[in-house]
Image (cartoon, rainbow, N blue to C red; front, top):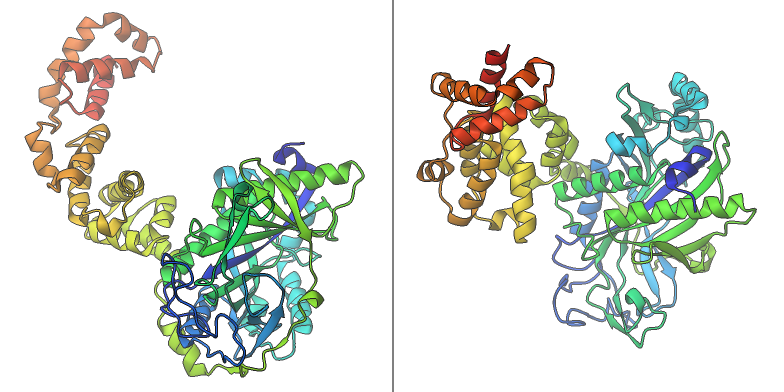
Length: 562
């Protein structure tokens, strides 16, 4: 099988995602008063409604509706005032009533968009040929494409769907097939608009546990257990348009969506626990073609790595089948991470198989302008806006600002630690939070709020680093001691005698002594061997017993050797 980079030179992958997110911050289920349970004993939070008993009537959870409206507003969706729930029929033990209550053609949130920024190795995954002449023409006629797309969208919407002129007119650049076109920058990075078709509300199914089977699958299992605690959990599903072109873009999109949902506080978004899950739809077409190929759907993408690797494998598999003259069938496939392959689960169902019809037990929804504005007013500062503000106000590098802004607790911690700082000092705080603190929390397995580390301690350590009182290697030692003891970094540095000497007058004699003892290396430097300066700095640090400022030693050495 060919490597992904080789395949993408000849084939274009067309990828769309279906991202399911449980509203774990709510207290009760979607249509009943049962407690939302994640770790309690199985089948201890159930009732006639979530078990589908005859005559039991559902009652919608208002807080769940608020959450999905917030999700739509945060992803630039148009909120539909008029929508309703449907019954989606299927027969499987994870839904005792044999149908799932979900939304029909008109969801609460329709036609949104998130702009994706891709750089570094992620940008390299999209080959140069993907930014060819056809896409350049599309960029040149972006306005015309947007208008044409808007007209097609408006004409093809289900009856009753409302889309504003702003949403239709500001959707970005698209090719003649109506798919998103990236805008590449000189440094190789690019941005691309990823359209969101819909975000709809539904109830989650029960949790199935297959005992004795391979990788938890039903095939070969000795028995299957059902926990109905999860049944009826409020769940939102976001469906993208097929605007993604590489596995890395898919991963970045899901990461960005996770940051948004964490920020607005609707879910813990734990992929490990299953509260955020993703299915990927992928097809291939030859480059320069505008038609779409037959897609397959991938299940069991329960981590960002699984999402990337599963899509990458499926792209390569489809290319191998097509190049050998075979046929791609519309089917659902299961990703097996241990074997790094996808296998067939079932032939893909069609909408007719589900026998969808309006739920007679639930009235249609009519959301008022006041309700929507109430949800909008409760939205916090979103990650992109927070990233830009941190970058602008504190002078922090953009990648670090983006990482800080992705988690509300981490962002608040940073802003308290960096209060009143800017430039080098603020960037040093960011470095400590993004690297030292994050590594410590991961290794210790505790949350930031439970770590006992205070913003003031990190600020104190950052000031020691920024003023060159200690080296970066020493900072790691000080951080470990600070986390263990709770002491202030200044106290730790002084008690251990770690404070660096940054007085040029005190360090110059050491430099002279080292140069006299290392005459051969000094001559090598004068002859053009710049790398030998590292050896000389090391000798100076050894002579000063680690207390000299290595940066100052470097400067003094270069000055003495010039």
